[in-house]
Amino acid sequence: MKNSIRECPGCSGVIADFVGEKNGFRIFRCSACGTLFTSHLPAAGGEEDYDAYYTPSNLTVPPFILTRIREIFGGFERYRQLDRILDIGFGAGTMLQVGRELGWETFGIEVSGPAVEQARKEGFAVFHGDLLNAGYATDYFDVVTASEIIEHLPDPAEALREISRILRPGGLFWATSPSARSLSYRAMGTHWTVISPPEHLQLYSAQAVKHLLLKSGFSKVSVNTSGLNPVEILHHFRSGSKTEPSSPSFDRVRSAYDINEALTRSRFRTAIKGGANRVLRFLGLGDSLKIKAIK
Image 1 (cartoon, rainbow, N blue to C red):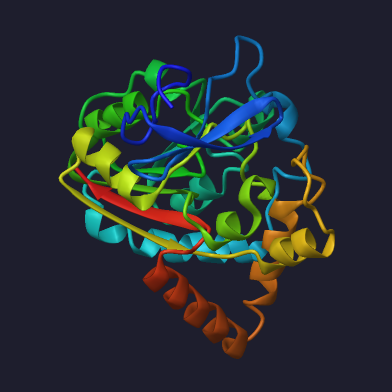
Image 2 (cartoon, rainbow, N blue to C red):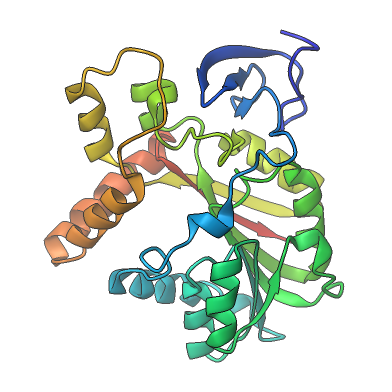
């Protein structure tokens, strides 16, 4: 289908297949790279309201999340030269908290006023707005992180070029984002709660993310997939949901927290999680893209 939808945000392709409609947005799948995306961007004033999104209940996280973030920071040590790290879309501020705990000079960007207010009360150097207006110096950071962010952006390519600019040569961009080729999408289609415009405007394939990052100034990119929410898949089939999807009633964030917390309660459960993720990584069917890109 040509000229009636925006170009694919993953590969700029102009041929895509219609896969469904949700929240007043038509959803298409790129024929070239498999990225899922909305036919159009929200009109002015129709974007997700991130001031309303964050509340005291979701500006706190379970303790096991902090443990996992400390593990992630262990992988950043090899890139540590300037001691500066930036977290884009810091939300509850857990990356900032762990970074400061480990001796990094931490910076954050967030569009949500309540999240920014909380971070400033805790003494963090944060910018209220988007990356393109923050004005960081060229080659300033060792590491830039963006967890579950690029699926929200109306112009992700522009943001990735800016991330490349502010990273020092040899610095790391670390990110996660939902996968367009996940087992959850294959099982539920547009009923998958991650497909949620205007919150999420696109879900990339691994192929698309690599293409975007290499075009944006990164020299080495690795992308794999992991994670699955079997509770949501079971809920979908048990509810017999065969009609057009509407606003989801299933709480994907809370259920994901519950699953991951349960799987950290013993070595045996942790081993099960690790084995499942190895299979999902091998098959490319995980719900989440795990992205590492070196400038």
